[in-house]
Length: 552
Image (cartoon, rainbow, N blue to C red; front, side, top):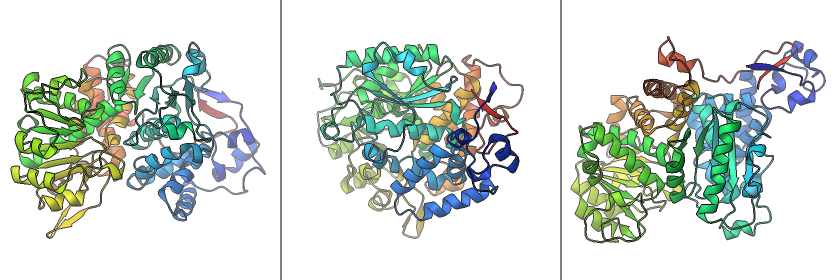
């Protein structure tokens, strides 16, 4: 319910959720005590946006544009979202991947002011009280990281806080989840990054990471505290180390409303691409053979979701797992390996040991190779050529990011396969022109999936997040690619229309939530798309008539 705020004068200008800058009307300036504190003019949002665009044009790097936009967010939340939502294809790569990787590497050096919460393990026993310090009392999503594995950059400790900040911005920019319900959080468990520990500007605890048991005990306290302080909150785990990511998801998924985007969101968007790749080939998921390069949380999450989707197509779980092979730093996962963790073992099949990825391709003869290795250039020319020799339409998914970590570029995949490859990457590559044909490489970016999950959970107040929701999200995203774009090799909808794409996706997820009995609100009498639209945030200034209405 809205409540009246007594803020006036300079306090209004210092609150980014209330500040209109040069857009206050004359009546608002008088009523709020702003006369003389802002220029004596009243500008439209369109004119303010024009000024933002002009100032951005003067910036020479995307990192400079990122810093500018975050500063804008710190002062004028509405204008920030108006800017980003005005041209998603332009701004999403600036406020998130790939620019966010560079921003995280330099976070302690470009830091301006706090955003989100910082929960240190030194606060053991006090977590509930720490959460109560947050000014908003109805939080629906906490995106939390311990900075243990940021993108493909490794352990960045406190510098990784840029990731949950950016992820939650995408909840709003891509799917319209209102920003006041979102809380980014860094859970500070130290870092094993020696360079950061010796950096005088590093903002985290200067200690190495604890044993797993100690870390999980503190996460238990955090999760329990969230249930009490923010009872409608969904916890979004982000960029934890691979083993921790999988085990923490297993620990809480059947008890609380939680999910892990690296495990489930990545799986969902790649599954969407696989669905459309199979459509291009006139095939089905259950007819393909898959070889992963990388067997961490992303690969395992995708394998599990892929198996579930193949079971829906009629395979048994054992048959589905038999179609998936995995290759990691120690070679092919096979039955004689003694170094595998529990969640890798279902994909360790009877096969001769090998540390040669190309030899594994020749032996297994996969139709699809999936790179989640963070090893730039790992899909070499001989690898792609072998895939093109074995398959009429090889599927090549080079998913690692940032850009320098991609297993191969779009140009390499199309050129080395003589235009036969069906390709997508974890970052956006430009169109490729080859032999008179234009190929449109897709970006398998999680932002097609997790914001839509967020909107559906927000609108329905779901009590759990299930794998079935991610499968439905994947199918909904895949269904929104036109046959004409599929013919050009594009596996995902255009980013320029991301909000409408996610509204449609969220509606299908919401249908599943209601059908599964997981909603805390009554099923609406209106159609589900209209129901979702009714919850979408609009980046427009509210009219203020003497008193500020602010959501508590």
